[in-house]
Image (cartoon, rainbow, N blue to C red; front, side, top):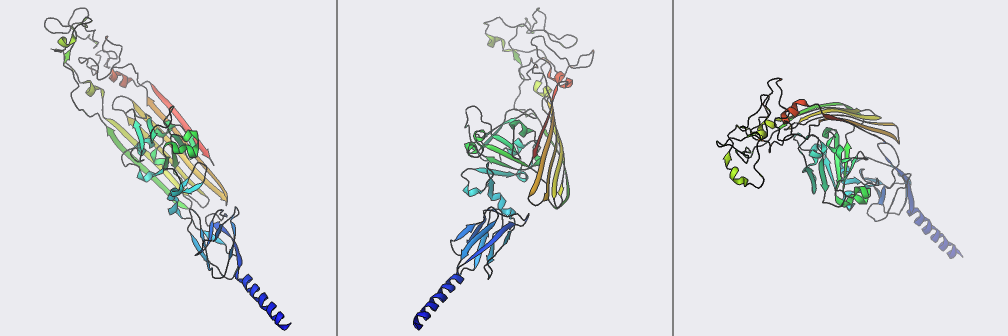
Length: 450
């Protein structure tokens, strides 16, 4: 009987020792910045494959055995932390933000932060500090040559003209334009040419049809998402003032003045008008119609005859040095509970031909955090553009009659002659430029509240 009691005592001692060696550690993981619980934090026993994750309330529970001395806590966007297992059964952890790792994270269209190496699509990120140092006037120009595989085609040299953007080829028969998002809100592609590059913090680009995986059918041609600048909490007042100047001009590659013609001439080689008189302008600078050769005539023979009238370089007369001026002001800062960023800019851009373009941007980005867990943000952008609308019924500078002098001024009023020829219904481009009585004004406003 005595031996039986001794055996039972030994078994109870061994069992109690085993229970003491296996225990449960619990705790809560929160963020240092706002004190809120962090769900999904990885909690791992150091040196083993055993682990768990925190729940929606940031709490965790994990069993440890004798010899296991440390717990490892890790979460995307936060510095990892290792805590020693002491005699207590509760270990609460506060994780600190790691801003360096944010560039390795992609926030997808469904709002889930994912490591770049785990995303099965190509996401390119371009910081505003990497924009070209040249005088770019809009976001489209800033992206040219910066995104691998992207084609950005400026189809017109007219100031303010839209560009065609193709991300990794045509993926849609009806349209090749990518989805444009500004601070998470969809915008038209035309707005890219109106956004001041100075207001942009960074740009994310999802190329090709991969955008459809994240944003649906509208993202089938790719996605360009623009994030505007914000202020920083607990920061001093910062004022940035910038001014830029650039100019454009036509590069002459060859002589475009034709010195031969195919019009009817008299015996002395003078071009004649329809009434048989030698071609000459009126007192106010209007030229009559020259006489055309009969239909079917071999014009190669007539083309060998030189023009005896003075001829003018219309490319030189119709174009000018186009100046571009950009001025911007940015004010940003923040307090313990709020941050702000205000910007104002003006772009005045001339065209080498006639059209002028003027754009004014006003933007305000304001964030407010009254209590932990409650955040407000408002992003407002006002864009006002004014663009000359010159008549399309004007002479082509290349095909105009060589003897017309666009710079001739009517002696009766000192103005350029609007219609210097009766042969066509075209207008003198210099007279069009001087008039400048036709223009369009386009105000645009977008506002985001979160």
